[in-house]
Image 1 (cartoon, one colour):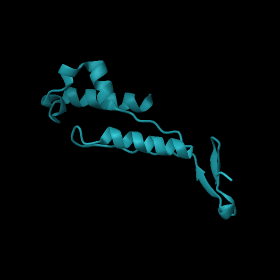
Image 2 (cartoon, rainbow, N blue to C red):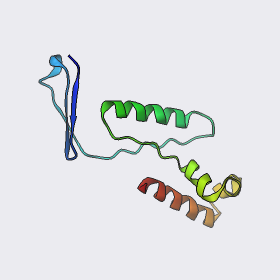
Image 3 (cartoon, rainbow, N blue to C red):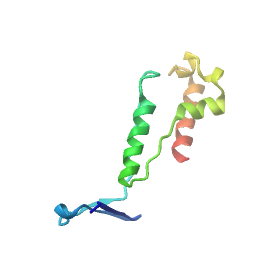
Image 4 (tube, rainbow, N blue to C red):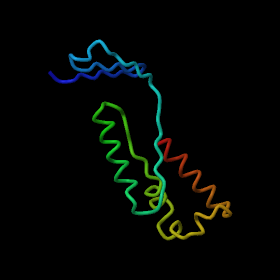
Amino acid sequence: KTDQVYFDCEEKEEQVDDAFKSTHAKVYNRRLLIAMVGLPARGKTFISRKVVRYLTWLGYNAKVFNIGDKRRKILGVEDTSQSNFFDPKNKEAVRLREQLADDTLTD
């Protein structure tokens, strides 16, 4: 017999196989953000996609948001790949980075 998982918008109730049928876990509709930060080419995107794949397999709605991809698409690679774009003293760049982060999360 396979596991059965039921979800709805307001409340999630998980029903597992016969050995654990008396155990019901109620999980309320809440959002979780997992942020991956670090040096380039260290596996952040790889791990993120694996986590999304697992959460989706469990029945959760999960998605990867990549601000770097959006930044390069909107502002161009050359304008945003220089170190001064990430300098906290560069007020215009700070504003652009915050705007991109907000826009990415609302997508």
